[in-house]
Image (cartoon, rainbow, N blue to C red; front, side, top):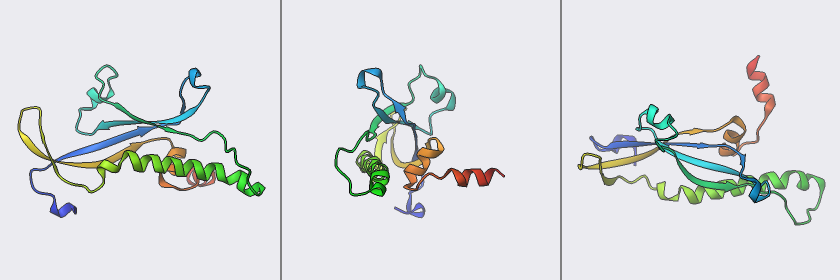
Length: 151
């Protein structure tokens, strides 16, 4: 649906995501994962920032490949394949997680006051460190770009 076709009076639900690569626990043998958190932009910032108000939801743990057990043909493949497969896995997981958001349909929901409203979900923001932003974009992370921009 295009921006111009959104009906007047529609409530926009801005979705904010946050993720960061982390070690899960010592019980999982030091396995790494990307926890993906979800919150809504129309929640007041003091509520969202409070740990006790629980305005943030753990949506998923996206796994990180540790090793590849197959024999690879040459040194270039040994060097690049783990990164390529890890990025493919990351994007396949995101595709599965966000499949309900595809289609951009208006839906009806009851608000806190008991009125039925039309809702429109929009991915507004993704909070992540620079390396993870590059992975979300599907681009290789290059420190040289960052160094040049600081001059």
